[in-house]
Length: 354
Image (tube, rainbow, N blue to C red; front, side, top):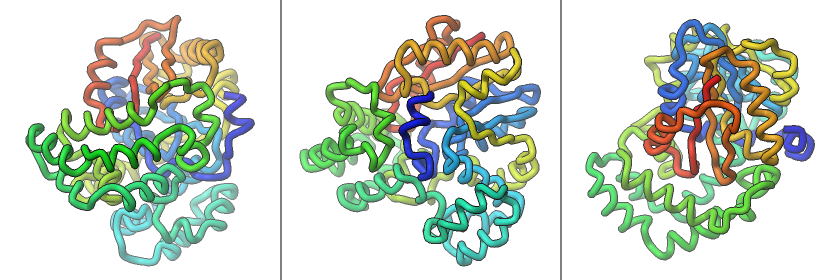
């Protein structure tokens, strides 16, 4: 991870939402009350989704101070606001001025996070769900190229009807041209994702792959309840809401926030300080594809050495195939889960055991 940490911009929020289907982690890691979990922090959504399984502890690690500041603000807001105020500060609801809500949460932040957010009043007022570089990119694409009627996909319960509506609204030559132009690695670098995240990508037709995944999610899986798709198509949550934002989970999460520890570090450097068996499960996003193949295998080995016997590692591939050579794979389970992945761009999902 050293190269990524050295060259990527770490002072910007790259993601204000997690675009990795939490249900794959729910089923793949099967977290329980005796688990100590290691998770990439990112925007924190899947940290909070895993927290709902009530593990003994979660270490949320990220090399980016901006991403950790975002998760810290989400955690502090859970403990200091009502549900309605929390949803408003996140940007899921309108209501009170968000600057005033932030002022009530501010003292619950550590100094670094407080300084980060004190300098970003406009970002707070806009709503945290829209704060990320990737989310802003999706928003620009939606406004320009996704017809408002595409939101009707979210109300259908029949795959044939979904396919017919998709073909009429999004399966057009005009949409394909716009999509292909927007979702090349070159177009996304520095605008949707950091350029360093494409360093090892050599896929010939990345936008074609993304377009096929979008069609799959819209036509081969139920669209009702897919909050990832709802945000892409409409820019809001109305008919479906991620678990960490649901009102019925608010009090539970509030009571569980003390089980989360935030760590600012490169993953490998942190793991080298930990004893064998420190964790029972790990959610590692798609971090391995930012490394060369040999570096990825070294990190796999290091992660495995810090997990207990029978522990599991979950991770995605986006455009670079990476899998652990030295750890037993739960390939059938992982493949079956990936086939139900409601996010529209990953090429694979992996589970390995120790």
